[in-house]
Amino acid sequence: MVTVEPGPSGSRFRLLEPMRQFAAVHLREQGRMDLVAEQHARWCLREVTRVGELLTGLGEIEGVARLRELWPNLRAAVAWACSAGDRRLADALVRPVATELTLRGQQEIGDWAERILDMLPPDEDALRAFWLLWAAERYTQNGNPAGYDGLVDRGGRPDRPLSHYARAYVGGDGHALSRWLPAAVATCAARASRTWPRSSK
Image 1 (spheres, rainbow, N blue to C red):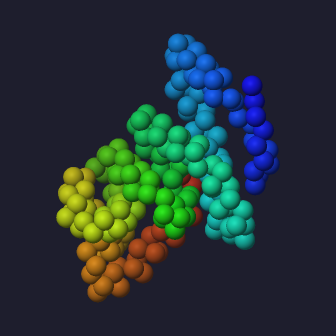
Image 2: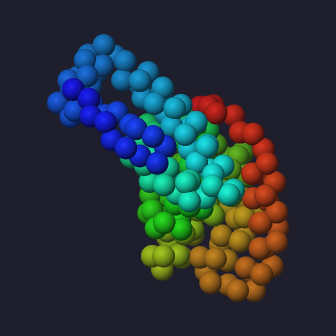
């Protein structure tokens, strides 16, 4: 019923697909799908936090390997957090590896950024500016600055260094990029040193 697969962080156990489907049916019948999904997301949060620590230290190679191993679970956890409207959990799941996802060409970062943005209330300017920066990557790669303007207009235009930098990045404005880069980097460094609450719908 269970298979064992080796991985960079040790052996992992997987249910055979028929057993997984059988268990999922019973969980749905008992109304426990959300409970199990939340527990899985909490586990994933602990794992991705550790991966983020490895990626920013001497264990970068191990962090890359662990992120590859964690990836299917991370996708499921972020999808559940977004569907549950838990913006803080979704933010905490993606934030530790946002830079690595972009470096590895994982296109989900753009979709996740926009889904988190859609959950944010108008007064969360700091979070909005942060995720607008990551959403900018998608519109830059697609050559669609007008689409990015529409995204910004939909949720408001926070007057923050990260937001100004993102708009300059998408628009290819080198002068504005130079102007806003130091403040944007300082903002990211300051926010990286904080401890974020794990859940607040």
